[in-house]
Length: 179
Image (cartoon, rainbow, N blue to C red):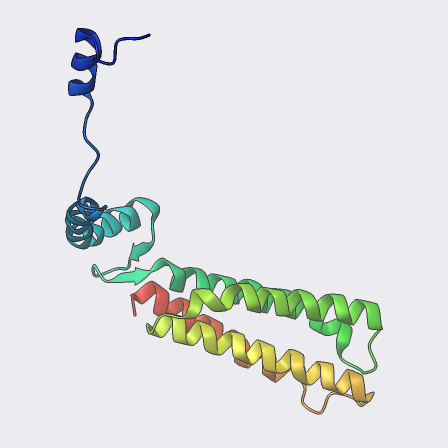
């Protein structure tokens, strides 16, 4: 029969084992609090550094900082307007060829949908970019309803395109000036 008393080596091994925590896991609370406080103070500085590195804000003349999204909003509004102009001549008189119209309408709507999130800031450039996109959407909606009804467009697209051009130019000017 084996000796019931532990040997000298077994006793030394038993003494060197760490004891499990007795607090039931509350020992993690203090490190989490320290991490939250450090994060609270470090995050704004880290975000500013990241924005500077990635170009998330652009400096306009006079040292005014314009959100980069607003600059991209104005640029994308310009590109959407150009795509609209390039296709608008094909669709002056209803009814339009169905496949071509659906492809064109879908392309313009996707461009607007992708650009809208860039125009959410309260700056003038973003507001004006969003206004230009609304005008583009309104023209597409009007062309679509005239196509579905088979009636010629009631308003000439030329003046509407000029109005859209003016709105896009205002958005770009606001982005350049830093407003």
